[in-house]
Length: 60
Image (cartoon, rainbow, N blue to C red; front, top):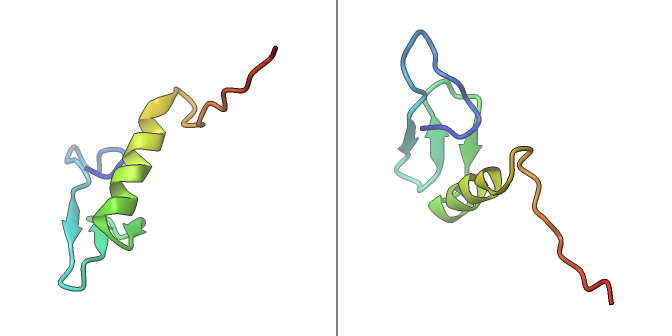
C-alpha cells in the first residue's frame, strides 16, 4: 500500500514493481526508483506522527 495515498473508492492504493525495478502506486501519483528508497520512505513516515526524523544531540 502506498504510504502517501489514502483509499480510493474504498480500495487501498497498491504499489507495484515495473520491469525496470521502479515502484509505482496504483493511482500513479507517487513512484520510487527502487525498493530501498520505498522502504526508507515507509520507515521515515512511521518514525513520528509528523513524519519528521528526530535529531538527538548531546546537551551536556
